[in-house]
Amino acid sequence: MPLMESPTTLLILWAMIGYLLGSIPFGILITKAMGLGDVRAIGSGNIGATNVLRMGSKPAAIATLLLDAGKAIAAVILARIFAAEDAAQIAGAAAFAGHCYPVWLRFRGGKGVATNLGLLIALSWPVGLAACATWLAAAFAFRYSSLAALLAAGLAPLWSLLLGDGRIVILSLVLALILYARHAANIMRLRAGTEPKIGAK
Image 1 (cartoon, rainbow, N blue to C red):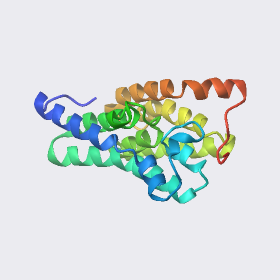
Image 2: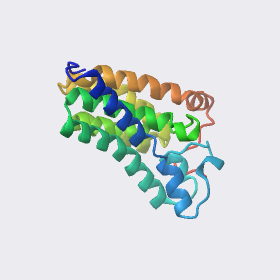
Image 3: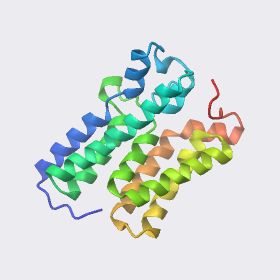
Image 4: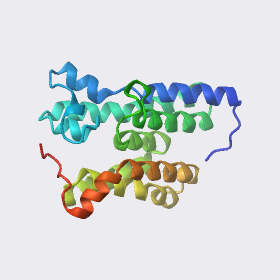
């Protein structure tokens, strides 16, 4: 973590801005705008890109993926421009929290995969790209989005160390633990062999 040098009130402000950005439920907004229905009513009930894909629309899934990642990127960049690096990490972490626990949806949000990847890219693009490559390789090899997400998040702290960006080791570890907790049901299904593969409706 960077040194917390910004005033506490400023950090709180950027935490609120990050949370509000992260809590925008793009999965719901996009599927409803495209006439696909409510993504919460199918599959896992999750509002993320993987469940949107189960509705049979790749464009909707891609848009959800990019926008869910983009809201974390936006939070980090805005805080970095108008404040400092400590505020950028706070805003990015808050965006992740907002995605997972949005107040508008009674704190029942997504699992944070795309938002976490976007956050890593914004904070340290080499680490973010390594995490994305991990996700892609695992998804291609195993065809399980959840397993790919778990591997990408779990290896992010290691990538941070190997790529010489110790600033985000602690943050990436904390986010990985939250992401693992959000995937508890997926982990159980993976162990039981009942987890649906990518593209399954």
